[in-house]
Amino acid sequence: MFDLKPIGHVRSPLQDREHAPKQGSEGSPEACLVFQPEFQEGLRDLRAGDEVLVFTWLDRGNREILSVHPRGDTRAPRRGVFSTRSPDRPNPLGLHRVKIVQIVSPVQFKVLDLEAFDGTPIIDVKPVLDQARES
Amino acid sequence: MFDLKPIGHVRSPLQDREHAPKQGSEGSPEACLVFQPEFQEGLRDLRAGDEVLVFTWLDRGNREILSVHPRGDTRAPRRGVFSTRSPDRPNPLGLHRVKIVQIVSPVQFKVLDLEAFDGTPIIDVKPVLDQARES
View 1 (cartoon, each protein chain N blue to C red):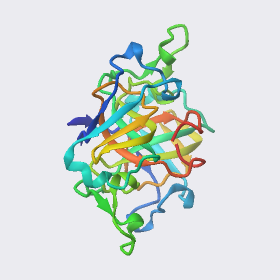
View 2: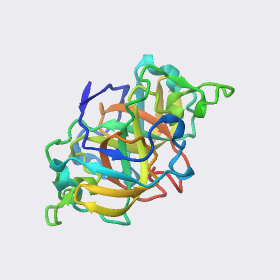
View 3: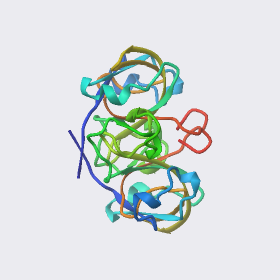
View 4: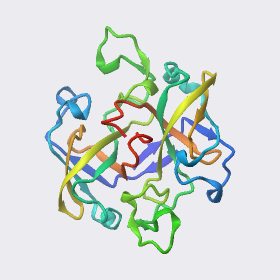
């Protein structure tokens, strides 16, 4: 077992699973990344316009499930969770590619295209590298 | 704090930091993803030819560091870790896009382009979605 520490959280108008879009590009509202002050040094080179990968901990995911109906469609055959982006998986990591649109403060960034509930813990941020190689 | 449980580990000829390429595409040897048997159901829809995202726990990373010299070059100015892919960061998550080239067994997959040391814990696997949106 490894200890994951939250470095911040998502502030978003999305409040529950029923109202969340399945993927960010299908229309997520503007959201904010709010970091704990002790991580400010690590954030100092992020700029408005940057596209970054945000890693979250999908704390409402069911960690005991190993197969799911894709997108919740019970008519579709179950798939192994490692072939899906379901939040139900042994380690409910979320991966979100977002664009920073405004540095509100050194620890608060407004972003586009973030599909995550209000309060979702943030655990890491990484730069997007070469789009052809990465994702 | 959240508990992350390893679901498997990397088997690779890469044994230490000095010999690891900085990014996978710079020439990683063929490696193997070896999963614990209890996660087999979650893996059942992965196929040879699939490109997937492998999430690892970079257990040699220094979790107390918030800025680093990019690629270890001490002449370069330090950068906040969240603008780098350094393994030194509060939560040392590794993200690797790899191609499955052979299903050796239901819990053992041979892959290309994996930059990770032998024994590195695997914590999640996700499908690559739309390349334009995702990474």
